[in-house]
Image 1 (cartoon, rainbow, N blue to C red):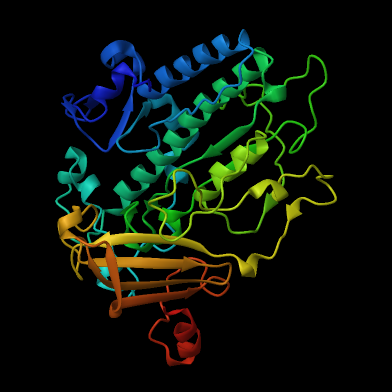
Image 2 (spheres, rainbow, N blue to C red):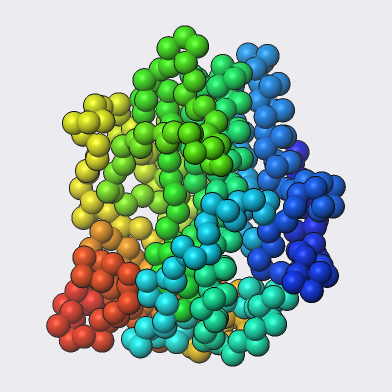
Length: 395
């Protein structure tokens, strides 16, 4: 059965000490771990459980699959307070584009209602839907996000170090990824409820023994734990990366192929009658061991690749349930195409009872060219000079 940390039930309760000395359910929640209920945090418990399972696998001859899911940096930002020291507030900047772009269609904006529910954000009395959040509090949010990521990094480090100690690193495939991004003030937005890159892009790192790195020599550690608070701790060398667009639907066929399992066929349309099929592509071609000095990057044919995303809205203008509308409330769906050159999004009418989009009912559109507008601040959807491209993209 799946493991759920016992301290998970406290994540959204009043365990955050405020400036008034009382406990609150805040967005920003650095804590002294010794003072919280059970004296621990969910991600620490997940790490301990994962290491315990790996210890059992050490004595087993059977192959294993272990998925370790962490809470951070999901909100609330409840993490050991010492991690704030890694990111002094005076060094924290605002997002490079902290204002809502003039050309952003209202339907594309997410009013970040989930963070507005937190007590410390409520106390700011921010107007709905566009805010903005006071700049000093924006910096505090960004500081706590970065601190939460570093806290998560230490937990991953402990699991990887245990793989080494148990002598499992030489024959274990590792994938590190996430389910979504998180806006940190870009475009005047926070959280994840949009089609912007900051919300849809995720990390994807793979380790395959003997393919992405040489097999370790006897006694050599591949993943020695690096203490972020130790100035003498060195950085791990960066691996190769690819400029190709990939999607998380490719994770299943890739892991299946790497494990020597048959990769199921692509799903037909419709696929309700098929017991097992897959979307995405096998990414094994990107995982060949080369000389890192001579070829640090791997380029395929990026202009042939497309990544897709979509997000629902209950109305054309931001409202209380814009971020998380129930199925019956969905009236508009934003479908995005992302290539290496541009992001194109069309917001169209949607029938939630039939799960059907009406592409002849266009409510709004977005078009950003990545080379000239990497932050996606200048929507040129209504620019007549791009009419030919838009015509070719529409269904």
